[in-house]
Length: 205
Image 1: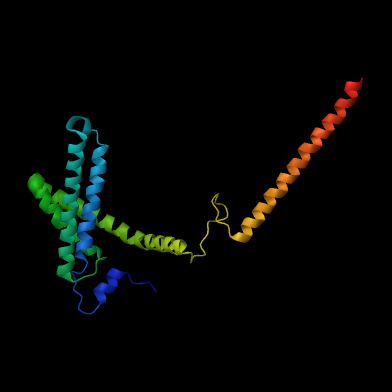
Image 2: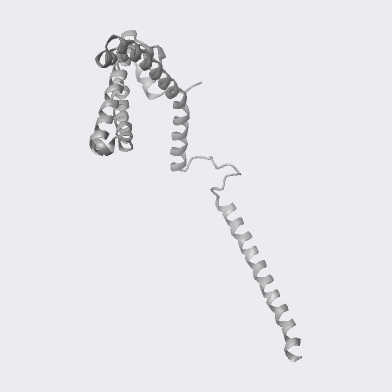
């Protein structure tokens, strides 16, 4: 049985409203989009003409505005339909609404239809990918927490060059290393002794 997330438990809790958690579903993606946009501006080819700071700020603001509009429209659709946050139909509605609004401002009636389709497709695809990756990210996060607390039996695969050894395995490894060192020392000493023995008759002759 799938373990419910804290957001789902808050939604199912008595007295909770459908709009609970909307700040995290709007503000956090908007801030992340601003960071991504700023990073894209830093490597943009236009930075040499307009200035790195100006182009980075412009990209950050544009992407944050687009993301904020989309997430806001998606959240309004979710609240109006009283549906779950992972309902992709909210993404379709939010993408159409936000794309139509921004497209109208940018390109008139033609831009309205074009941007509505683009936003609906891109937003739904991104939300679907996020839903699919969320359990893997949560599992990875839990694994790191258990490793940090020392309560995990997780280990690297045998073929990995990185291995975490326990005390017994570490002692065995040290014993093997000492044995190999002793064998190499013996071989080197034997070779030197043999070379010396062969050189003595040559010197006498």
